[in-house]
Image (cartoon, rainbow, N blue to C red; front, side, top):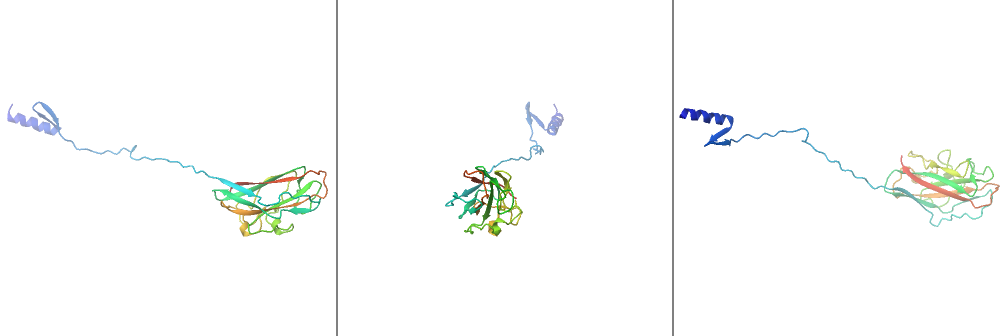
Length: 225
């Protein structure tokens, strides 16, 4: 083989990237290229955290005298010390609904009058004030008349009432069962908020039932506004 032939083959090997030396094939170095693939050039991870939340309310009677004792028909009676309502849990913007029931045979008086309208009809009022209110509101006090036309009276055609929003359900101003004090606002309350609950009754003028009458008040929480 002539030198010219060897030179030509060497040149061809260099051109193709392959060098044959003593019968061996030796690959020459190649340049590296990075290629971006759109299907895997980004990644995401979703982590979900579920908070353990609680929305609640507590009614503490403390030393409230809940047995009103013997009361004359047609007469009125009320709690002389308040029960304390406290918003519990860890959620803000808590609002309350009130419901109630009478067991014993009487029904709620279904009018807005301060006197009973008939046999076996009990007038029942509930109002929530600020905790700075330490004395029971009087029967004709505006605390029992403020807010919507329904005021603070529990009205029904039978022995079950509710449920009805306390306050104005997220609105400003004075609503049902809510006194006209700014500090008694029942809308969008926060945990730890406290209010005083006062109860007032006027008995029917006549009755056909002599049994004890138990009046139950229930406050339940909901998201507001």
